[in-house]
Image (cartoon, rainbow over all chains, first blue to last red; front, side, top):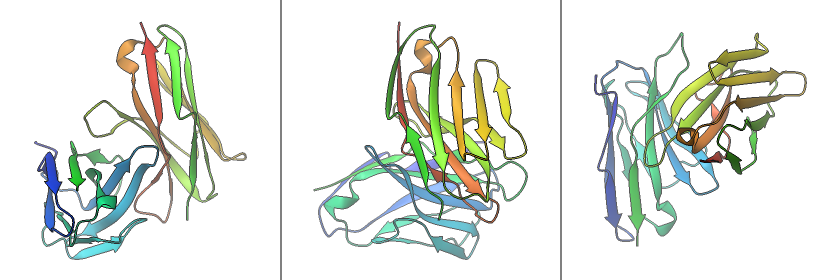
Length: 113
Length: 112
């Protein structure tokens, strides 16, 4: 199993540009989520999904859009990038029941100039 | 919603010493408390977790304790080694929540 994969690893955007951060998992996990990590702020939840076709907002959803058309993929869209969205983004997944362990991807470092 | 406070933000110890990281939570309905370790340039990885029906759990050099009455839990690392240097996150999850809430992280530095 590849686990949770994220692309790209690094990205530089100009203010106002849009882009999609990709996340995929091959563990048949129902739950998937997106976090951003900023210095001193820990991991803040952006959006999450409990299954294909079901998404919900987390703590900091503004400026981001998600959809979940398949169990495997959970892309994060930045509609109009702003410097405040400069951050490291992590995708995570887990099973519905049993262990609550979340499996994190390697992250995408995004810089918005 | 749940609020998780984590202290200290930075912890520096000598190799072989013990390290303790403390977290408090606000939601008395929280019943699952994981700890994640994040090495430089990588995503966080679960190292140990505890559920609310247990007061303490050990796994080799790491242990977690939970005080439900006081709503705090702690990570204890004994005989620290340089490879323990990383950022550690605590989290808390209520029974009705899908996703845990994370603390702000502790940067542990173990000096050889």
